[in-house]
Image (cartoon, rainbow, N blue to C red; front, side):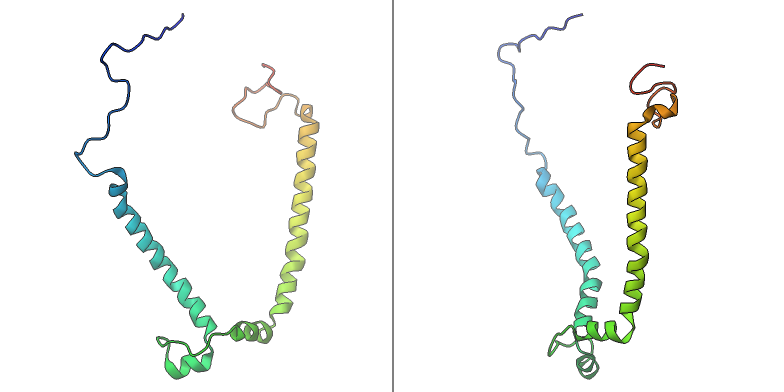
Length: 143
């Protein structure tokens, strides 16, 4: 069966009509939504920024002037003190010694399995790894 297109009748509109002035346009309707989401994002960022601000202040400044005062100076000294006094290098290298071989082993094993599956797909003898193909279909051949 062949479908044919008929040309539009004379005088009919073939273009979209402009939006009516019945209500606000789409961007105006989304302004409230954007303001709400922006407010939520700011509320989410406040504790994070407060933690960064507090961590950059020296303890003496905080204990003398309180948490809600302007800082006299900001420094990364708290981070270096925490790194050195807690024995963090030992734990960091312990994590590296566990994580790097685990990631490399997983990558090597996954690459070997992928190579085997792609090169030797006939080893499945008709089994399919996808539920979208019929049970007996292999490489697009019907069952």
